[in-house]
Image: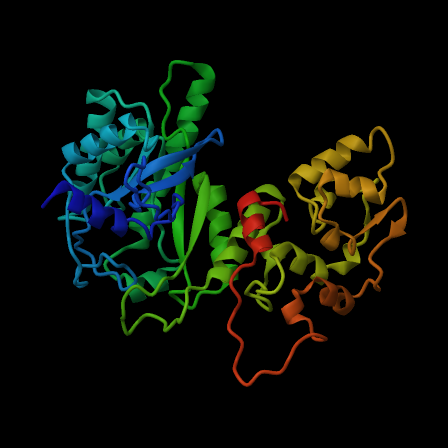
Length: 431
């Protein structure tokens, strides 16, 4: 098979792995033009220091011994198959890098023969890049669950980031849709990679010449909506992964119905808004000091699709509001909808010099159309409605969901896709 055909098949096969983001560009070259963004193999990700880098995103192979119901690469799916050799991947990476198309490589793989054989091929590829070609670009490498940890550990010395996809939130989900996979085999390498990262960090504090181990951290991916698991279970799992396994990032992937299977749910569209709410809640766990049990409980196990998780939490805890922006401490300010991490830091710094007025908050970057219902400024409340959940909720709901504007319909309303503001909060994390 021609190399270009392998690249077409194996870059397309990698697009459902969101543990590094995809650009989705489809721009093709034109006569006399320069460059080609048509291949889905070029995507973007962020390094440990915050730089955005373009990556060649491919699978080593899409031949797979597993038959996971949700996966496009499952062994029973009738699709074109291909495999790269480690030499081919190394050559592609170096050639793309020299042409300035990419700054690094995202390399994943289906499981061919067995986990150890697959991990050995991945390791052989990154060895070639680092040791033979002296490639110092960014490498994100998948660790294969079930592979010998000596192979994973050696790969961790060569890669910048590693990830082990946990796939489904619960053991019951795995038994239903991926019975050949074992939860323990997925969690064990995550645990060992997390422990190694911590150990090497401690060593580097003592000795500067100690090499780095997965310096950009490890991540994982969860599929949302393929099983009946509610949001509370998912977000509690994420909280546990961050705390226990030293994870850098959990990626949430709305289930895309790529194939028919009797054990899969019948969905017309991927649950994108639910995915968006989980990303917003993830920011609250990592940067705002929230616990999963505060955001949801057994009575409310799923996030509202109408309001972001922070606003929904504030409405259920109105006894804590309004807070005076000139007196509240940093952690309490972070809990006000519309005040993000940057805004809270600026407020606590600026008020050392003078008392902040309402107009000052707008200049600082506070989103007053949400925050005004939960704060007082110099003792004055600017909400213009009583501090009651129903009144404030009516003001905050999107226009299409306000009772006063709602029009009767003969057909059930479809869940809305994330709006521009939702997408922005997911990217910036400011809620």
